[in-house]
Image (cartoon, rainbow, N blue to C red; front, side, top):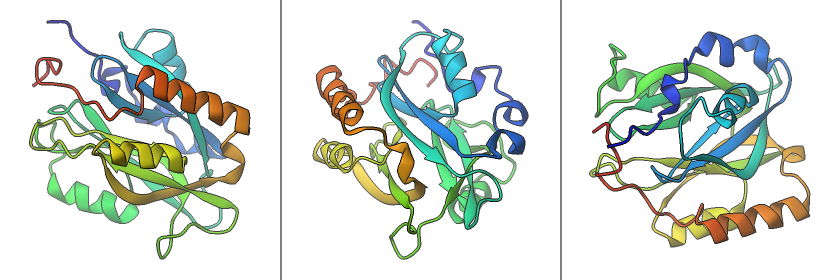
Length: 218
């Protein structure tokens, strides 16, 4: 059975890819889709370049969806941390409160198929308040495929309400606003139309999920 790449083994060094200095200014967040795992993944340009070069292994393609996050020290910015679980071969991103809760569920921070392992602070973002984002920002919705029981959890993050609604229609759970992105990051209407077309034609927003045979790490 072929081994499917998990982003955490990309010679991943949080101190290099996700250092505070790397986020001194607004940073683009880039979405990928794995055609083998049928999972989504977001990252910054440095790690995205490694994935593009093939360092991540087969199956990873850009969806065309991006958004921008705040730099460290931006007014109202909060820390966004990243977790990984080998059971589902998947990541999740969480703001300060949820980050603390996930840390407490794995206090020894061990790599375990049924636990989330803390990988560090990866982004800074304006935080939503009362289910809304501050003026000058836009909501980033988090969707969940609701496959914990199958050990196949995966999350998708999007600023696009059309994508959010399409994923929900395919059975994904809308977990609400995860963070707030810059309103300047959504791109032109033409780009969004093209991205939506690619998502539809290639099945990136289909809501399909990997079966157990695909997940060779389980």
